[in-house]
Image (cartoon, rainbow, N blue to C red; front, side, top):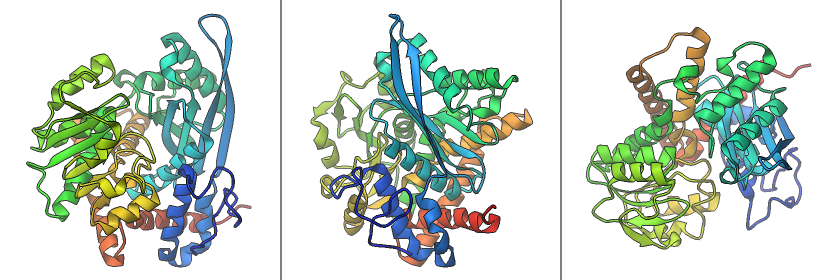
Length: 435
């Protein structure tokens, strides 16, 4: 049952701990609020709801490496397994200077919800290292990755917990992780990670999967509110793998991408930016800064006149401060946790539909599931088959969540949590407690 009192990691009711305060809940605090909001809709399963508020396992590791100059540097790493009731843990690994345990805990929990929402047989997990990878050489990055993998080796595995790329990690990082795990286990184990290079058992279609899922869910949501993608104006925050691919697919469907923001700049063109040229430019420069278009101040991005807004950067971007400024009819969350609960309420009051992260960006983990299955069977599908399966699963999942939202008169986020949390807790209840 929902409680007005805050809940900590152990599920105890008391005053907010230091990392959860009224002004800055942090990612884990936001997730706990989301669970409290869905609890009244869980029926008899609510007796198990504390399961969702406690990570099953959280590992904090020291990651020492020798730098190229001969000095020793230490970095803090994490791997959190939130819930394993429905299957092995699944979730990415991010390398970022702002990574915290609270963030990784929340991301692992959102992975539990995301996997259950699209009904793939995984639990939720997440990992990270607090490091700015731009300060490391290629060799230092490899040493960091391999040492981190060795430290978390005790809890990962093809049937235990399967990492994947996330912020600032890619197929090369996954190759190093796979090789390190394989060396430690004594046999080649391609299924220990997903998002690998094709030559090492990676799946066709994986690179574009998350952005493609954003497009598929966004198209379904737009259709349901009578918004024609052709001619619609789109603003995208974040121009990495997710944001760039989503922008490209919306552009190819006839939409105008009028604004793009990355970590360096914000560009605007009411006639539409050249997405293909921008992707090529960013691939060489690492940023869109310097590309043609009007340069806006960072905060002006949220005021851009558009039909569709896609936050595809980091969590906590849409807040009570900027939510009243948003002009879009539809927000599609390409990032994990980009909208705070207070901002959610504001957007709902303003009749702005939010397609939540736990369904909108689930394309990546869906194709990761395909990759994992292909690795186990040593039989690989064509890219066309991958994309067809992805579209079908995403459309079916969104339509089911839309119906739950209509039946219960709740937001799509709450509906997604109803569907996902019910599946997780049904599995928990059926498995029982051991011993």
